[in-house]
Length: 198
Image (cartoon, rainbow, N blue to C red; front, side):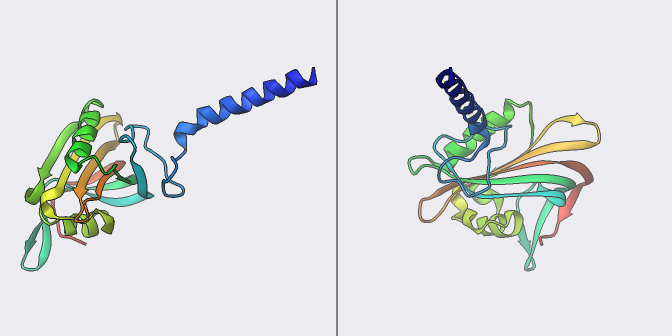
């Protein structure tokens, strides 16, 4: 009888662990990170950078970054006050930034998203500015020709809060490939304004 009770407890514990597994990071992920439930992880990728912020000032760029008289500009942007989850993945060596971006773009579109802006390669501006000035993740810096960017608006579930997803993929000079995602929910403070760098 005791043995049967012990087996029941073991099966319960095993089942509980299996249920919690998707919420936990995978081996090799940066400590404390997790996938966002809206998008499946790109196959065999690893989380290399993860952060969250609440009640933050978040800029959504909807145009390329330009350098004007030594200052950075994006002619069209939105200012959001709200919450953001930022996740950077390193993709397997056999996959390209284009493949990573296209895969996540397709998944975002299945959520009923509206694309607000997309650019590729030099049409986005300098990768250095996206990596360091916009995302604050130096790992995302690479040759301009290897970058892909997109910003999308999701259907709202709350009339006072809007939802957005940002995607950025880059192939670095050392051939490592990264895919960065941002999940944003908050109130739009200003729309169609100019971003003046930071």
